[in-house]
Image (cartoon, rainbow, N blue to C red):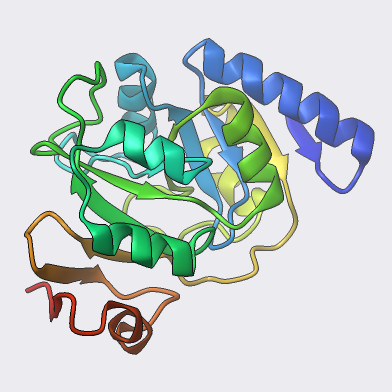
Length: 217
């Protein structure tokens, strides 16, 4: 089912259907502030596995988790460093993904995470509204592995067809660039795993002398 978010009645029905689908461990395509994402209940191992299979990815590539607030970050992580909050307060909601130590008590299975979780608050009203309704979502870019990320619903539907139950059409993506990913699991260091919409210079300006910014690889 596909719903046009520009039409109020369609958006309301689409959100209702998306909420039900996520509750049944189904998949939803949603707009974000970068490219479109394919999402599933982060706390359903069955749903996350379905997401990975649909994309053609293995458990060695766990999906990031989109969250609605900083309070959710605190609940999902174990002793996050102060620099995480400084970066989040500057760039969230926005195109920044932070890899942090996961809360060990959580009963979830995102794949081979090695005790970490990648978190982001997206700057998109539709995505945020859904997150506030259903809680954290495992969300990966809406594409088959090796193919370009979908910048509109047509592209996403072309990749996944009826493997995804609900498509929320928020129009053309505002940016083809993905989020910038930072690994904050090593004290004193900010490791740039992927440069996306945010530049290394923007990151360094916020980090200052509080940590050393290094590039992965």
